[in-house]
Image 1: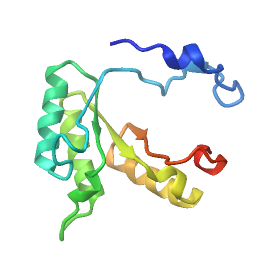
Image 2 (image 1 turned 30 degrees about the horizontal axis):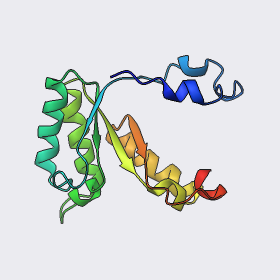
Image 3 (image 1 turned 135 degrees about the vertical axis):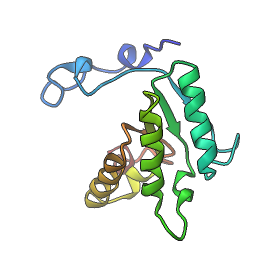
Image 4 (image 1 turned 30 degrees about the vertical axis):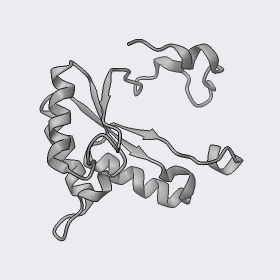
Length: 141
């Protein structure tokens, strides 16, 4: 499915930050699969690999690891260890992993930098921002 609503209803990106506009080299559009939290147990790490397989079967470029992915942690490894395992598995199938996050509006800028750094180190290629529970200036920022 093609969707052009964002660039049809939003103002053009600020050229000071995005001199190439939507043609910025880091923007990589593509199809994604996603399993919403109530459709399956997002804390089931092995099930996430099956969803990556389905994304590959559907010729998608991405899979969105939904809310609950932080439940992959166990006594031996934190959730970022498992996220890296999923990203590495997905990369073998040419699938990029996006990670669901609600944290952006609730973190300090230092915490956000740490969090996004952990996602990047694990190999995630994007973040799906969600559930900002407010339209306050702080939440929007």
